[in-house]
Amino acid sequence: MSYKERSTWISLAILVYIWFDYFVQLFSLQGTEQLNVESVNSLLLAVVLKTIVLEIVLQIVLAIIDHKDANYADDERDKLISFYGSRNAYGILSVGIIMTVFHTVFPTLSSFSMMPTQALTTISLPNEYKIMHIVIVFALAAELAKFSTQLFFYRRGF
Image (cartoon, rainbow, N blue to C red):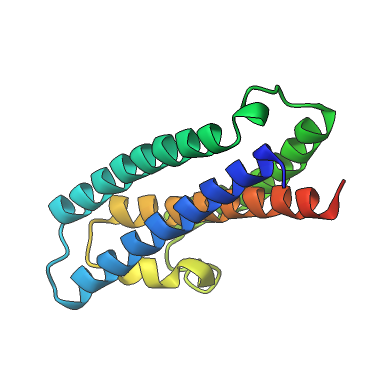
């Protein structure tokens, strides 16, 4: 397994762990009727700080373990794999943004079209926070698609 592939695995694991924990806490607060703007802001701040700390620490540990490959620049294969991942992520994010805009402009018409994010529209927060969470879900889906595509091509042996 190459250094770039291990780094991608680490980033994917951090993304899944932190955002799964965020949404579990968000819906837990919603269930106990303690969800408010301040609690969401503190959860989001915690997500940002945890992500930064975990990425830095785990990438440093990986660089220490695999110090021979850590300083190599991306080769053509790495750049192509990164391009394919970014292409897939861009497509998902574009569709998500279009759906979010459609939902914002036509909220009564779009309730059936927002199936992946239907649970987010029922949370007891101001509409701006609902829209923000819909965008977050699509951004997460895009990142998951990017990392998954990259790992697929690394495993496949492009």
